Length: 113
Length: 112
Picture 1 (cartoon, rainbow over the protein chains, first blue to last red):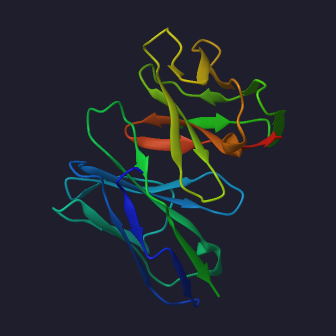
Picture 2 (picture 1 turned 45 degrees about the vertical axis):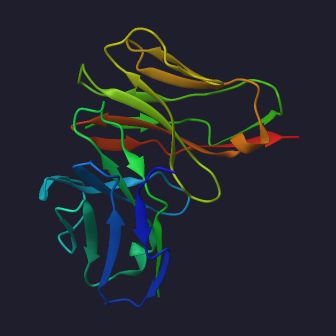
């Protein structure tokens, strides 16, 4: 157990809709990162939040956005869903100074129809 | 930009034997960290082992060890005494500025 939880575990949406995925980080971890993992591929970095501010972003469009809250929880929002957004979304938390080690949650599997 | 390459999409090993998974990476940075994660069918990404680039000594965690060759930018994972529970997808990952870059993964199957 990593202490990182995600909800929901599975989600089905239709193209054009909006979705919010949630993550609860390990206690004391001040950094949260989100990754998208398409089937059969390695995770791709979406963005990272540190102390409630975006602290880095991968090659994802602005319709992917996020929030981090003072209680270590965070959200990933995706607007105008596309079929290619179907993937496993992973949240990972880390503590600055702990040798860059990220601990992952179990993921949310999103299917866009 | 950092890249990570895993050239073995699939591997298999007999239970109790030893297997080595390969990984190479490309970076112009000097201080960074490397990781191996495993992802079993449950999809939970689990940290296996971590290596700090400024340390010459290879990291070891029980049955798992790495062969870190900084000049060659190589970071292989050796699993000794393989167990059925080691069956999983293994990802090599590089982190710099807190961003993880993953390889494409190696599916390891441990055969009884």
